[in-house]
Length: 238
Image 1 (tube, rainbow, N blue to C red):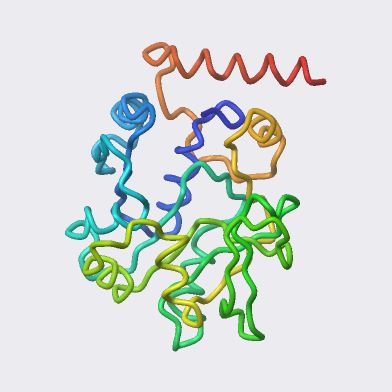
Image 2: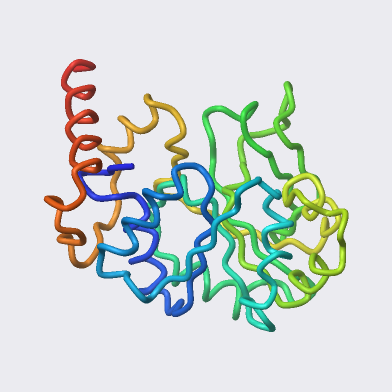
């Protein structure tokens, strides 16, 4: 989806490169052919491994399905329909060098104006998650799970052994309560899953990819059509 005329996935990949992440796995399902075509035609060709999941397994099960790719490395796990206005190298540095030593993973958090639609976290004075409330009607606050995580190898190894664990939010996070560090994103953190939020994202403050000319648009007319549609909706919305 276009953000200021550039695919959201391009923002993610550029931010990952700048953070020193050299190996990327993209798990595709919905419109997987369009994601694949972007990767093949852009400057990311050959730099990203793409896998297709014909039936959704769940975030944790996807980790398990691709365990060989991750090996014994720290893993950045992200829901890429979020737009971030923060550099990921700060997040990575905190996880590797700043988080409490007794934690196993780091969760990116943000403050939301719609807490009922998010997973809300309660943390102690060290920023370690003590309680987690996944989309409850009366959430105890606005500090939300940003669905961006850094996992130590112990976490991915545990998930690999738990064949009945499929969902990260409802199964992995509860298991690791008291061992989850938090890193707060005070800048843009927006889920673009609705037309309204997609339009709002066009005005968000974010770092544009280093090289804007990612794709020869003449060979990818679908994205050009999407960009025009978003521009038209913005004009109509005033």
